[in-house]
Length: 114
Length: 113
Image 1 (cartoon, rainbow over the protein chains, first blue to last red):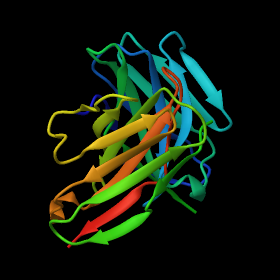
Image 2: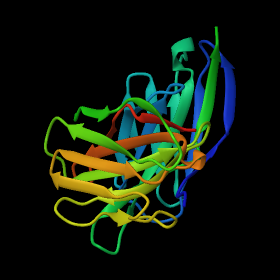
Image 3: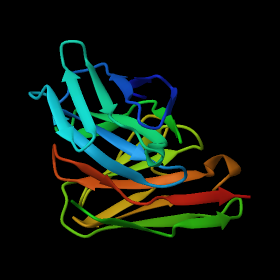
Image 4: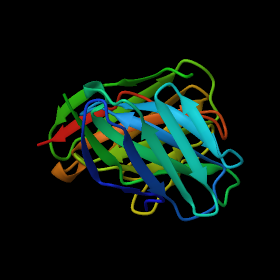
């Protein structure tokens, strides 16, 4: 099952513009992570934001988290062609065995046009 | 951050055979997971690899089809048994410390003929 739904499913923008993608999830979380995946390759970890944090920055990336709405957003500023990739959010879900597992959202395919 | 390697990176297999994928982490980690990703799709969790005990499988995945081992804190294997073309996919290993960043291996691209 997928914990997160992301929108839009696909996004096409011009180089230099900002890109915003959203993730909604269903249950309470300890943290949420964002990943990038270039075509046919492994996932690159971008940012982890904890449930007691509201905003986090890393370079041109800005992540927000609203636990009351069970949603998060990833903003990429001044986009570049190299940002073209799929972006996924992943949320932790506690298990009955006392640990957790990460469930991934549906993903957003970003295309940045030069 | 943890560096994760997977072997093989890709393979083409015949129907009915089995393939074992290895996942090696360069540091001790608490959690290790195995995922499957169909082309153009998101990641689906197969199971949590538990150190020294049986893996915890997600709905739709069973031990007979996807046996998993995790003999220590840095290594795990996933076997895809009695393969069919429907098993063609990318298989990914991830690892991390409890409630911290989870990192991914480069994946194993499997094609079953």
